[in-house]
Image (tube, rainbow, N blue to C red):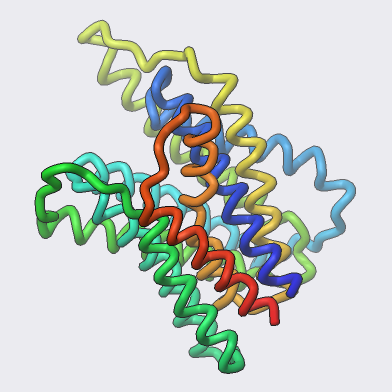
Length: 282
């Protein structure tokens, strides 16, 4: 029951972080936003490090660092595939793949669920598609590069979950520290390259969304901490599928704050998500 609750709550918090990241990206270059989010999360985790016991080990550093690389690849491929579109197809495809990777890994290493749990997982996967589905008038069929990048992005998100789960249980926040540190370092290097590239043209990255990005980084750190707790006390297969419902948090905030309309198919997905969570909690 606690695992299902943590997975669902982590998904909503991840969605909130994405919402803040999206708002800040309207005022600041997305690459710079990603770097700020990672570094803000790193600072927050460092502040809480003395209060969360954890052993520094080669395994914790390795898996945490690799998860940071996976996160960067996931973000880069996600931005690229959504730029190609159509988002209404590629966005839920990414979310589903991100759920299937940890689900398959968890079941392959011996995690078992009862009949109700299996039904709940199936409903959750359907809910991921419905929640992430954004109807677009006249949407075109996706191209092969777009589909491949969407699958790659989802696989990297799933790999991030698996790598965090592989970190030793006694490592505390160490894997997340490495994740945020590696992620932030890579994105800062990319930001520097963009600055050098834009300088001859007089273009700027923009800094109007820095505060929102920092808030997003704080929320993202909380979401990652919930995820870490979830994989340590529960099954990766369950946490992986429920976390893939992260678009729900973004959609609900967009409807509340920006007054964006939630499509009926998305309401259906949210309802299925609640039912799936209840079944997984039994």
